[in-house]
Image 1 (tube, helix red, strand yellow):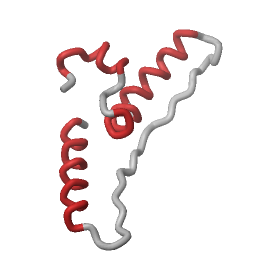
Image 2: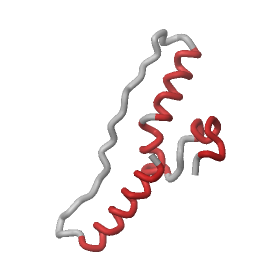
Image 3: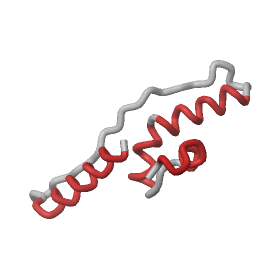
Image 4: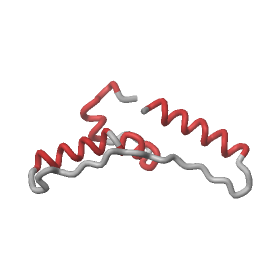
Length: 81
């Protein structure tokens, strides 16, 4: 995931230098969506939060917020750049 984000950044940088008039660039994110099996169960809610952090937010948070999700940082620690 990290190298994909770096590659997207490099491609966006290059595109901006040669962009045709009215050209746009974006990243399409695909994810598996999770919902808690028991909506009122706190463990199920936490599992859904982890699933989203390690699927969608892994790629979206650096693009939109400038850093990986805090939950990922807590769980993965130094292994995350």
